[in-house]
Length: 389
Ligand SMILES: Cc1cc2nc3c(=O)[nH]c(=O)nc-3n(C[C@H](O)[C@H](O)[C@H](O)COP(=O)(O)OP(=O)(O)OC[C@H]3O[C@@H](n4cnc5c(N)ncnc54)[C@H](O)[C@@H]3O)c2cc1C
Image (cartoon, rainbow, N blue to C red; front, side):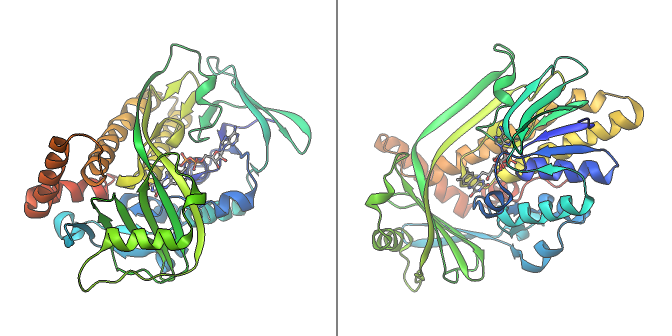
């Protein structure tokens, strides 16, 4: 097999890249380890920056997003049993859209299949080769047979646990990481959201987030231990804890059947550079953010937008300038998102440190809720940068 760009991973990064390249007439093969059903049902992120929505719209894959996505113009910060609204749109002119990651993936898979370009699910034993040469290749097994895919470039869009990053020789990458001493216990509940906007609650019992996926589906999270045992959390205990953390006079949390439950650890992680030879890393393969800032999916899309631009220019003119700056361009944005996610995480979670830390945290929360300058900074980061051009 031969293609121009071999894309490993059919998450938001890989699928968006495949479609951006298709629109410019560039051929690619997408290789995905999981089944189509699995990736279309994997519940993860749900907050799309306006730039992400604008890009998906320009790509012609946002028809359902515009029909079913819910546009939000603010978020609430809740602490001391009081709520403060951060009016995102008033402060920045931009908004966010609530639309599940699995819906984005579903739309992109449908668009890919329409193009009749290859998207192979359930590939096994993927490995990348000769990336330091100008004839890189990907080897894998598909439907029981060994395959070799020759290409010009490999896009490593295979997430945090993928194989592409680890195939880069030792000593090339520098890793920066931070583990947090807590995780999120998340539920998806079949109940109408209790609020029109997301609520970030900072409580002495720990952080809680009220989010949603649709008018009938609420997504709720509780700060917990990173290795929290779900067996200790029957549904009644989860609801009881959520009621306590969101407590506010005149406001009630709606309960409903719990459809899904899981614990996610939280970490910050970045590798530099995001490229080695003809292998380009994008999305979670290169960087992870704690979900408090809602940036993971948006960063993945932002990376491949830059990568697609570089590849289009290279194929059209032979000029490698944009590809050479791929890593630096993406890392600049990734580090801003890393900082914002770290900032939100520290401002809102219960830190079992000394009381001095708790006082600093409270001072920051009060500042953000009382100063328009501080609120604008939060809002600007939350909605994400506007794309130019
Ligand atoms: C449990 C969980 C909850 C999250 N919640 C949020 C949230 O609330 N808000 C937020 O902003 N972000 C959240 N994130 C982060 C967000 O979902 C990711 O940042 C986003 O999925 C990144 O997209 P990606 O395409 O880079 O990687 P992924 O979505 O991970 O896609 C990588 C793809 O590569 C495939 N793959 C892996 N290895 C191989 C291989 N060897 N060969 C072929 N294919 C392979 C995987 O199956 C997967 O389909 C969450 C992440 C997780 C894990």
